[in-house]
Length: 92
Image 1 (cartoon, rainbow, N blue to C red):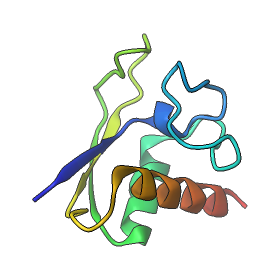
Image 2: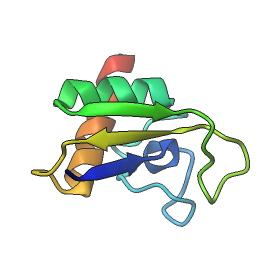
Image 3: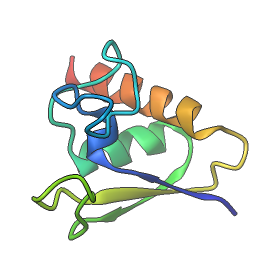
Image 4: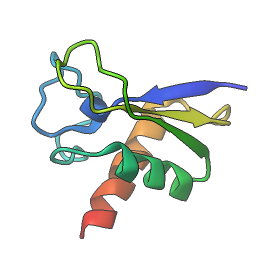
């Protein structure tokens, strides 16, 4: 079983690619939370586990991370794009 990690920085519109953003600016959202990401992962159809006390290596403040389980059939970039789109849709 493949486990993918999604850090909030991957989807953060305020970050550049060099700072860790992994989706296009059009899909990125401002200051995503692990709760929003986990909810979006579940909407996509995978199991999500939140780890709140983790810190992304390029950041100083812990924002946590989301472990995605069972995403064997999707590439990480496809998964991130779908999750970012759901987070943006949830905010509207």
